[in-house]
Length: 326
Image 1 (cartoon, rainbow, N blue to C red):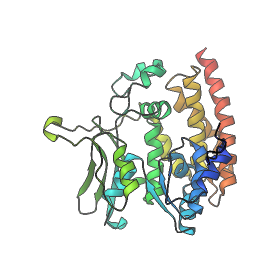
Image 2 (image 1 turned 180 degrees about the vertical axis):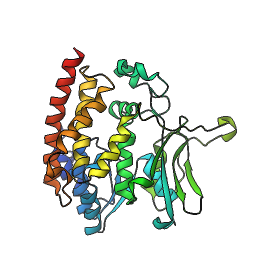
Image 3 (image 1 turned 30 degrees about the vertical axis):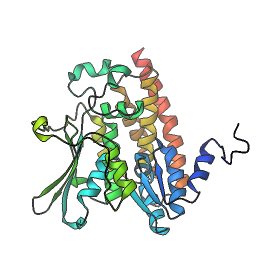
Image 4 (image 1 turned 60 degrees about the horizontal axis):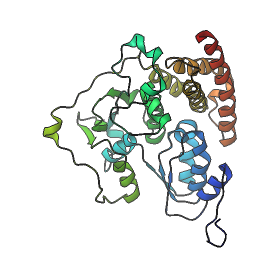
């Protein structure tokens, strides 16, 4: 159908990597999951600016991605609203003056449910996000806080801060997208309507600020902004993120793969909502016995091999828990 049009058509993972290798001033990686890693690496190899909306690239292979950018004089700009907020708050600041980084989280669709009801949550209920219009997978990751767990690890990899400096706070209004606290006690907060055009537009126009067609805040109409600490029992994904940062190496690849598989099983009706975190923990506990998990000098092939291994182990763990459900 495209014959003679001058438009080239291709499909599959190799085609995406080929597209990433083509000349461009600016490339945005918004592929969900580990599938976004190779195209991002390829784009950086061209020395381009990579606008990164793919969390898993930094979580699974942060050192590789940052080294690739440095090697080819390329730049990575964050597109996640939280990391764009941090990036903007740090403009003109020295990293050594940072005392803490505070990631805000909406808490997702189930944030106010009684704890004992969470196990019975359906896919439709987990998808009813109160603030953001997002894809199916990321919306459920928001409800389970796995999305925020990935962002915590991503913060450590992108900004190079100590895990102890990273905090998460529930902010139901989703107006403050993240905050940076400095050693003089000042806290810089990035505020805006919950609209991804903020962070996409910032990355697209950086280092300039362009006029964007987004809603302007009416603070008087908002009236108040509220915050509360996340409940560890409700959001075990945050504890698992801390364990991943402790293990380092290929733990991020194992975590991401296990999370993806657990989510697949929940979507298919084979796992309870609360079993997703249990499956991920099962996989991390099992693979932590493997010396390869904490390997520091790993390469891209090691990441992909750990991804495949963790997916198999997560399928097995989900099958065991599915039998318990039945």
